[in-house]
Every structure is written in C-alpha cells, then in structure tokens.
Amino acid sequence: MSPTQKTTDDAKNSTDPSISSSLQHALSDVEEAVRTIGHVDLFCDYDGVLAPIAPRPQDARLDEKTLNLLRRLSDRDSLHLNIVSGRSLAEIRMRIGVPGITYAGNHGLEIDGPGIQQVQQIPSHMYDAMRTLAGTLQRSMQPYPGVIVEDKVLVVAVHYRLAEPEQIPMILKDFSTLVTDRNADHLLRVSSGKSVVEVQPNVDWDKGKAVRFLLEKRHGSDWHNQTLPVYLGDDETDEDAFRALMDYGITIRVGNPSAAKTAAHYVLQNTDEVAVFLDRLLRSFPGA
Ligand SMILES: [Mg+2]
Image (tube, rainbow, N blue to C red; front, side, top):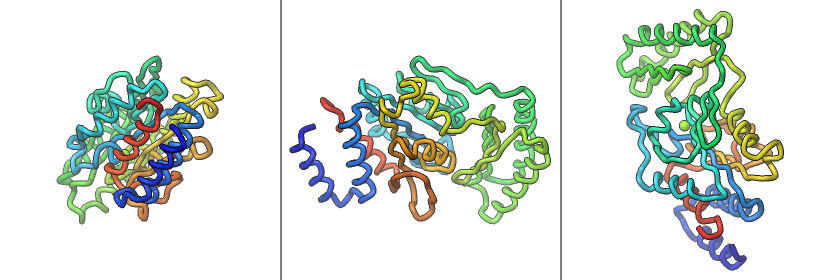
C-alpha cells in the first residue's frame, strides 16, 4: 500500500463515527504489521466473536457477510485462517464449512487443517473419569429447567443461560459439589465462560498452547519473525491465547470492556466490529 493510500484510510477511520477508537487503533496496528511482516496467522474463536451468542448454543449462526469474509480470507496466500473454539471439532467444522482452513475444537484438544492433524492423547483413566462424570451431570441437572448439558466427548459443558435466574446459584453449587466429590485425584479440571461451566481432562493444554503449536508447526521455532499472529476471542479460555501471544502478536477481546479484565491488547464491542476488522484486515493485503 502506498503512503497516499495509508493517509486516505487513516483519514477515513478518524471521520467514521461508527468505528470505535479501540477498533481504529487495532486496525492501524494490524495494517502497519501486515505491511512490515507480510504474513498473518489469524485465529478466531466462534461464539461471541464470529457469531453472536444465542440463548441456545445450537442457534448461534454466522451471518452471510461474515461467512463470505472467512471464505475470502481463506483464499489469501499470505494468511492462514484458524478457528479455535470450545465446540467439538466436528461441530465447528460443520458450522463454518469453509474448506482449506484449520479448525481447533474442544479448546484446541483436537485440531484438523491442511497438513496438520492432532488430537491430544488423553490418558485412559482421565478419559474414563470424564465419561463417568458426563453421565452423572446429565442426570443431576435434569431437575433444572433450561439447563443444557452438552457432551462433547472430551469436554462436557453445562449451559445455564436459559435456566431460571433464581436457580443459577443452586445449579452452580450442585455442579461444583458433584465435580469435587468425583475428582479427588484431580483427573479433571473446570473452566467457566459466559453462562457455561465445563469439565475437561486435566491435561497441560489450552487454547494458548494450541496456538503456539500451530505457529511452530507452520513456521518453525522462529515463527515470531515469519508471521504476525492475530487472535480474536471473547471468553476466559481465550485469555490463555492472549497471554501466549502477548509479546508477539495482536490480540483482541470482544465484548463489554468494563466486564472483562483481559490480557488482550485491544477490546472490540461486538461481532459487528469484528466484521469491520476482518474486512479491513482482508483489504490490507496487496492486491486484495
Ligand atoms: Mg467464545
């Protein structure tokens, strides 16, 4: 991009009231880095980042505009597109359905993309503990209307967004008691997100390690000189990735900034701002 174009774009940013100042700063940071480094590894969470959060997880959908952006981003030679989600690999792949990109499901426990397939090996005693707890959680949450227990095999999620608000403290207490009782040997661990609590095997792996694994696999140990990692997430599990990329890339937390204590470099308000960001990222490449 020529200096003239940069000035024009900057001027356009500064006069567009629909673009927040955090988005403006993230855009100028990423456009400058694309000019300098010339290659991007883009990592996007799904729920709350690409698709607005829906009352029921099965109703969270990509709009056509965002889907089209993902297709066009996946076509760029100098960009690797990765989706990193808490959903299972099969489900996240089915929901997005764009070929040629890398999908990391169950918070990175299972990864599938061009030239990269990896499933974290779960020790059998952890796996068995997980399966037993999955059945117990299904039964113990039945009395609570609106609670959805989602069995993703490697991870079990208890969604309580549709529960009666006055029952939520009891739901969380029951969940916590049940997991504590059955997890004396710490084979499992708990994480929490937006109206969801999850249990997974207590392996040393998270979204941050999954992202670093993908960067090293593609670019070698010198990846930080080869590519610019850009990560967009909206939840606690994404904070592991923000910390992993703190000194190397551009990290963005999506959602209410006052509610989020975050390690991310930037905060965007919602999925609409994400779409603007992705569109500008796409257009920052020469010839786009
Ligand atoms: Mg999310």
